[in-house]
Length: 428
Ligand code: EPU
Image (cartoon, rainbow, N blue to C red):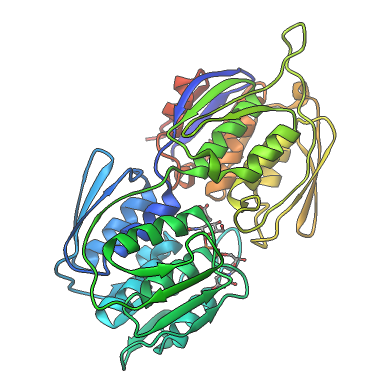
């Protein structure tokens, strides 16, 4: 299996262009199932997960083709309504086809995703929301079968916790429902807004974009459109933390700084200089009069739904804090098992103690952070190991890097271009 080899403790310098957001591309690809015809999606990152979603649509009868960063999808003729276990087990976001299939075909059969490395991640909110719209759902043989027996009728759907894919699924399921559907305590993530923008340009009537109360008024039909995926805020944030960890100066381009409010505040509080333009950001770590890097200050974070600190940036932030001056308390409130990276960071010398949903990180001096072989356990944990490896002296060897390929486009090449000594070592 391929590995990433990093010889760390070298500052980064240059420009990193940000790709389209994985978590926006996935629901927008699913939304092409809603109305027959040919769609063009722009700024689609070429990732394992986006390919999986396009292949899932292909098993439903769609035809797709990539040309550069655009993907054309023709959903004129659907031939099936089933997302099989083999696909869903590789990507939980496959459940995003439930909403559009319910709306267009009145029937869907999707394998229940099961737990994953970061938590149990049930889809009970999605199913309860569908039922409130009049969909009957049954669970059989590990599959959810959703069936529409009478025309869907708008209703009020309340989320106990704002769920990103739950909100997206209910939005897509309700676009044709008679009357009004109100989603209360909806997720406000920019990726949800991107989906609302696409659905609106298709002809859907949705009010409340960017708030936690969304109102969908059912329409009779929708049209295929051309839509653009927003920049990946998690990728942008990961590179900001990479330069924080390794030192140096980076310019991040093609990004939306407005989507990273919490991270930017925390990086500034830690002592980094971060400047935001309209579509660019620059970040660097202060140095003393001898040109030596000043250590970052330990700061606390609590992961929360948007606009709070994103859980998808928690592992990378911890990788930054392991070499800070002081103590940082990292409180994970979204997923119950998202500290799998801790044991791997400890292999590099990090001093971290887990106390329930909190990790106490006691910063060590940069000179004591030392490269080691480590194992990636999930997508963002893998990114945190890259961030830590860029800071540590000596060689860090990261195995199971297929996790990274799910969500970061050309990460190794992008880091090489800004001076990192990083490469993929193929075992075959
Ligand atoms: N939850 C339930 N029941 C549900 C749905 C959610 O209890 O039916 C709980 C979850 O267990 C969690 C919380 O609600 O505790 C929020 O989860 P959410 O549903 O928002 O997560 P998701 O939609 O499954 C998306 C992203 C994740 C990201 C989370 C949180 C996509 C495709 N995935 O997942 O991204 O961590 O929102 O922001 O949008 C990643 O990219 O690495 C990733 C895991």
